[in-house]
Amino acid sequence: MSVARTVRTARTVRSALLAAFAALALLLSGAAATTPASAATTTTTGLDGVWACDVPAGYVYDQVSMNRSCSGGGSWNSPQFHLRTPVDGLTACISTPAFVYDSISWGYACSQQSGVISNAYHLRTPYDGLTACVGTPAFTYDYVGRSTSCNLSYGSGIPSTTFHLRKPVNGMWACDVPRGWTYSATTSNLDCASIQGVPTTKFQLVG
Image (tube, rainbow, N blue to C red):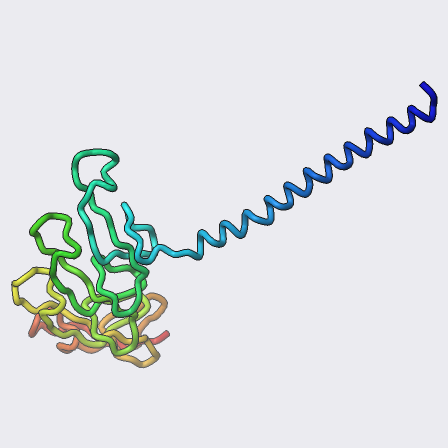
């Protein structure tokens, strides 16, 4: 074999290898470019309105369906949940830490037993001055009330405690000292009484 032919052969092999490497690099770069787009689509789709076998973090549900979709092939019925993104004013079967609720209703939408009623919660975004059935860590409260709308015992007609939520500010008299605050004075009255007629302590906030 001549020297010229050997050189041409080497160049041909090298060109083929370079072309193969270029094609592989193009393929890999295409895969890398499409993967984040697919992931972004998945994370932004949302699950609001989806029926699911469990309730992921960040969601609540407003209906339950008892069927075999989530029974793993068994002959028994299991709960399937109608997922909702929690928003102010939504009535849901459970509450969630970012919200409070200002009333409780009763019906069959949240029940997991045939013919048995269950409670649901009217979710509210906390704000200064809201009267709610529960407190929340970011707020304090300056007086309590009584209402049957917060009662967790169906049909009892017994009023339950409600809380007048307040955003803490310096000098406010409050029934509770929120995290990160202290107090400079106390008094005793019926504003915060969980038992009617029994005075409790109220705190002047400093923070």
